[in-house]
Length: 302
Figure 1 (spheres, helix red, strand yellow):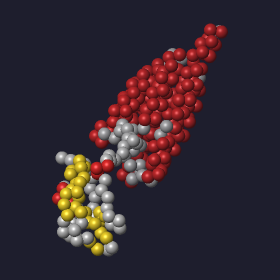
Figure 2 (spheres, helix red, strand yellow; figure 1 turned 45 degrees about the vertical axis):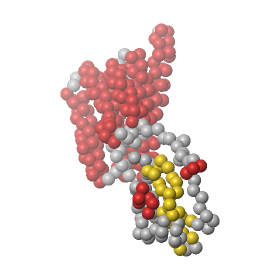
Figure 3 (cartoon, helix red, strand yellow; figure 1 turned 60 degrees about the vertical axis):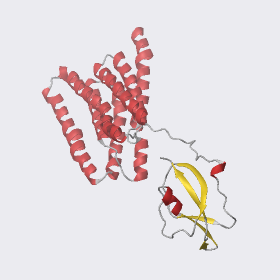
Figure 4 (cartoon, rainbow, N blue to C red; figure 1 turned 135 degrees about the vertical axis):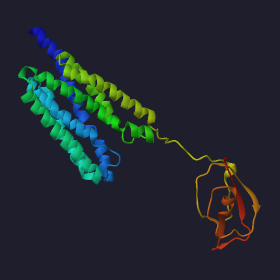
C-alpha cells in the first residue's frame, strides 16, 4: 500500500499537476490571436477549424472520463477547455465574414460537434456492451486527439505559399508540445494507452509546426540605418529650398554636381532613372524658379 502511495505521489501526481497547468496554457494560448482579430475587427486568414476540433475533443474526453470513472484530471481540464473553446468560436463568429461564418456553423459545429458527438454517444451506450465501452470510446478519443494536434497544420499550405508565419501561432505550438509530454507521462504512469499514445503524435506534430515557424520567420532588423558620407552631402545657398515632385525607391551609388542648366520643365514628375531624377529636381527661391539652378546627377545602382 505504501509503495502504491509513493508511486502516486512521486510520479502520477506531478504529471497531473504539470498536465493541467500546461493544458491551461494551451487553451489560453490563442488569446493573442483573438486580440489581433479584435483590433482588426476581422478574422483575416485565421481558420476556425482548430478551435472547433479542440471543442469536440474536449467534449469527447469529458464523456470518456465519465464512462471510465476515476479520471478527475481529464474531467476538470476538459471542462475548462470546453468553456474556453466555445468562447473562441463565438468570438470568431462575431468577426468572421458571412461565408466563413456559415461554413463554421453548418459544416463544423453542427456536423462535428453536434451530429458526430450524438452518434458516438448513441453507439457507446446502445451498441457497445458495458465491458467494451471504455475501449471503444478510448479509441475514438485517441483518433480525435490526434486531430487536435494535426488541425493547426491546415495553415501549413498558406505558410509555405506566402512564406509568412502570421497565421501560425507559435505560442500554441510550444504549449501543445509541453502538454503532450506531460499527458504522455500521465498515461504512462496510469497505464492508460488512450491518453499516452496520441500525445506521442502530438509532440511530433507540434515540433513540425515550431520548425516551420522558425524556418519562415523573418527577423526584424532594428539596426538598419541609411548610408551617409560627407561627399554625398550637398549644401544649398541660404534661402533656397528643394521641391520634390515624386519619390520612388532606388539604390544610390553616388551623388554629385554635374552642370548648370536652364529652367527645368514644370511637368517633371517622375523619379526612376538618371534622366528622370535629374529633370524632377527644382530649386525654388523667393517664390520663383532660379534661371540656372544646380543640377544634381543621381547615379542609380544597376
